[in-house]
Image (tube, rainbow, N blue to C red):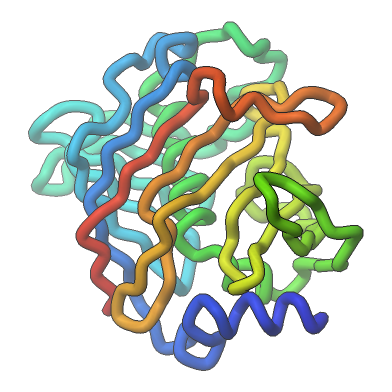
Length: 239
C-alpha cells in the first residue's frame, strides 16, 4: 500500500473501521442521457439501495417497477418480487454485452448488472482499492479547477466486476475522491466521473452528488456538457 492510498483511506474513515462495516443503505435518484440512448429512460427515482460491504452484492428497490426489486450478486442478476420469487435473470450478464456499440439498447437485466456493480464500486470506494489483487501506483499530479489533485493509476484483477481493468482516481488536498476516469467495457466510450458535496455518515465520508461526463482522447472533459449519468444520494446509513 503506497502513501497516497494510506492517506486516502484515512481521510474516508479508516480501513480498520471499514472492516467492521456490513452494509450500506441509502436513497438514490439516478438519471442521465445514457439511459435514453439505452432505451431505459426511467433510471432510478427515489430508490432504496442496499450494498453488502463484504461481498459484491447490491439490492435495488423498486426495480424496474413498483412491486419488484433487482439483485446483483457477484456477477449474477435477477429481478424478483418483494416476496423473493424470481421473475427473470442472467447468470453471465457481462458476456451478454459482447459486440454492443454505444447506441445498442440494454435490457432491464443488463441495466441491473450495470447499476449493481457500479453502485457497489462507488459506495465501497476508496476501500475497494485495498482489496487483494488490486494494484495502485501514484502517477503525476493533475491540475484542474484551480487545484492540484494527486492521482492513483489502478489495475483491477481479472474477475472483479468493474468498469474496466485500468482506471485513474483523483484526490484533493483533503484526500477525498473528486474524479475517476474509465472506459466502460459494457458501453464503450470514455468517461470522467466527478464527485461533489462530500459528507460524513457514521464516521465515513461519501460524495452525495455525482456526475459522469464525456472524456475526450486528449483527456479533456466536457463538464459543461450533458451528464451521461447524474446521481443524487441521501440518507446513508452504515451498519
